[in-house]
Length: 125
Figure (cartoon, rainbow, N blue to C red):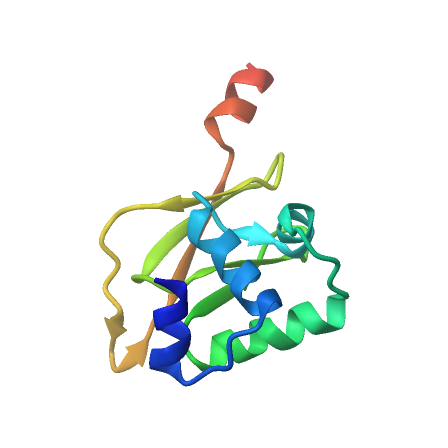
């Protein structure tokens, strides 16, 4: 799937690019740079990572968004959906409900919902 995506988007396949997309394709939730780097089997500097992410964004393969803690999260761009960000633990999860991507002519890629997750809510008691 990943090799075909590179071919379809006319992007040169490198081991670093393939690894980033492989990690994102297996993720159940958006990942930060630190989370992606921890899963990498090769050493990649931050500049190379962000250069590749920018290329993926331009090709509409990956989307990014900023969390409460001013940290960027990345995920494969599949369909428009919402993200829930916990204001207590800063956890990020994808929320699967219909999001209208066309609001008065605007193109919406992502919607942010903020609150307290179930775990933090139970802990606070």
